[in-house]
Amino acid sequence: MHFPLFRKVLIANRGEIARRVIRACHELDIRAVAVYSDVDEHAPWVREADESYPLHGSAAADTYLNREAILTIAANCGAEAIHPGYGFLSENADFAAACARRGLVFIGPPPEAMRALGSKAAARALAQQHDVPVVPGVDGLGRNDEELLVAAEAIGYPVLIKASAGGGGKGMRVVGEPADLRDALQAARREAQSAFGDPHVLLEKYFPAIHHVEIQVLGDHHGQLLHLYERECSVQRRHQKIIEESPAPVVRDPALREAIAAAAVRLAAAAGYTNAGTVEFIVEPAGGFYFLEMNTRLQVEHPVTELVTGIDLVNWQLRVAAGEPLPFAQSDVRQRGHAIECRVYAEDPAAGFLPSIGRIAHYVRPAGPGLRVDDGIEAGSEVTPYYDPMLAKVITWGQDRPEAIRKMGRALREMVVLGVTTNVPFLRAILEEPAFLAGETSTHFLAEHLPDWQPPAEVSEMEWIAAAAYEMLAGTGGESRPPTADGRQPFDLWTAAPGWRNVVSS
Image (cartoon, rainbow, N blue to C red):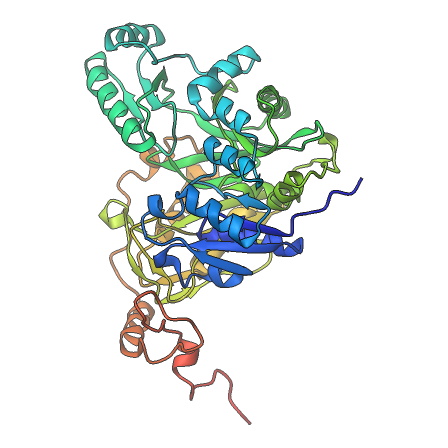
């Protein structure tokens, strides 16, 4: 049976994931449609798309979270489907349902599966029904503080309070003593209400030394639901992942790997899941594992799975959404070698990792065998306070973990981002830690090994020269690039000095 692909897909996102989906569309001869906020008007993905349309404003609520504006653009431009990327509207079941009402395909799971798994409380209940191990804890819905105090004593301190509706560390508190629980509950509820519009929280056992392991799943509309093995995402700062890798260093036993993967598939199947998704677990060093939550979307760290399995997840997201069956079975999926991803953020480690705002003066993307860079920036790009400060993802592949680490170290040494401060020196410091090299990367890795890390104080001579050159020449060249949002020409050294050549003429 022939399943025609879409002719036109709108990408309801920005940055590196928008570029990633555009490339996948072009490989399948699908026209890609970009949307952009006022501050993103001259961003690279806007040029790379076949069509692009404005979402007027700068704040996320006015732009990439503006469901009605995005649906109207999709209808007016003749798009047949919407790819939400991750973040923004990607896990919004109401948006997925609205797409269906407008005759648009939402490239993701059905709204019913999103609702069943989008709430941590509902997903926890579903997991328990299908013999998926869950962290000891209770649902806070309908329970007052006195009842939760009793529950916490039964669970045993420390306990973790977390928002049922969200993620990213919002609405999350670790409580070590009974005297601190009431205030922490109130703070978590307020933060959950502010971030997700829902004060519902869970109370769970907190494991001080644990590993964060997730299973990639992929399902079609013909009854085939597979796992693509695991990733470990234990190196985190304030509950945000920084480094991800596959296979997981903590999963050394093939039987444990298969058990976790089987549990993930069982849960996804129970929810009627299709398309790409990720089931997250915590794993004890002794081998016990517990379900955390399911992310009903593509993950930021999906490239490491692509590199070790050879399966293009975004390609298959598009094809599955168009009705194609997966042409491979579970027995065909293999892990090969080792892949690591580092997230490069515009943030200042010396200032408590506050976001770094400004114009990127110069950018050098590393390259070489076994290296992939997914980015959303170029020289002249503006880093604004309106969106997540992630600039790029650097992903390396090696025959084994040591080779992947060596390649990552070389890539980060080659990477240059001038004009904003980045966390690249911090990433390099992590890679050089003996515990990281040994694969001993619990979720407390940074607190245990780099608690007071500060970047080197000195600035290299080349950085001073580059900064001075930018200040002197900015605005005098770069005519081949579009102007920035404020009308200024972005600086490009190669066009700013037309009389200079990097070869000697004969």
